[in-house]
Image (tube, rainbow, N blue to C red; front, side, top):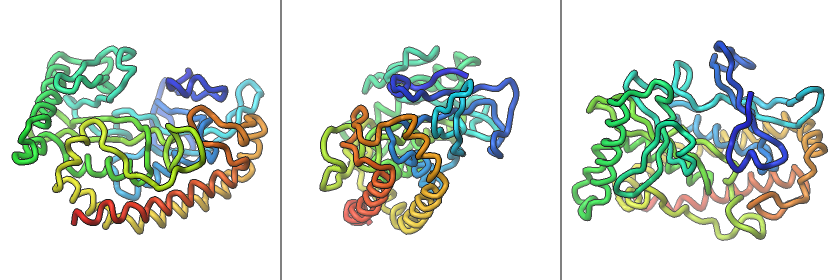
Length: 332
């Protein structure tokens, strides 16, 4: 067991990662060696990661980590409500890749990983999440070349006319990632890119989506809770170009039509379930970490109670879902 996270490791309530010598099935989750204990210190609802994972399952992302809420006790000291979850790894029960596949992450801490590179056109820092220990020169060179070629055609002046960029990426995968990011108004999240193998048939995909603390109207600003009006997330990184393609946005709009009502039902059901499951746990958590009336990091002003934080997130989700209708539907 060791500490995990970058900024999150700086908070009083620490997140951890665990690696076992052999595969284990913790709390009936699929067998694996690597798990994380999320502290959710900045998330006073304690629920945002579960809500994010629920959305991922509803829109049928290829793999979504399983999670369980637990009480963490270390050396007899109760440390509060934690979220035990599968870590993002390539494996039988996790992210599926072939022998020559790779997974990279846009990562400003890229230098902490043994294998990394900067892209040529946009100079984005990329760190390899797989392979890590058994990297080959063939896979490393192929990944760098493929991503750089994709960026080159995406940056071309006539990219909307030729749409050659679509030959390099899985449009549905990119559309689902972009859709979920906007469904939850995720101000900050991990950006993983993966390719199943080095064959011409496979294309660059996005996912899994991770890091849900700054979402649902919280994060990256100071002031009143939930800025109004709700906003459509600006297109960052590759979506600054891809989002200008009406055909790509049409795919996003189709996802909204297909999943909107089911997402609403599943998220509301999860809120109801978690309000019951965490009712006693959250009391002990906030006795241990007395922050309900304090502003934490770059979050919004506090509401004072766990129940108010949960309901505020819930109401934001419903209002934001309605807000997205006129943003997406005109593309159909």
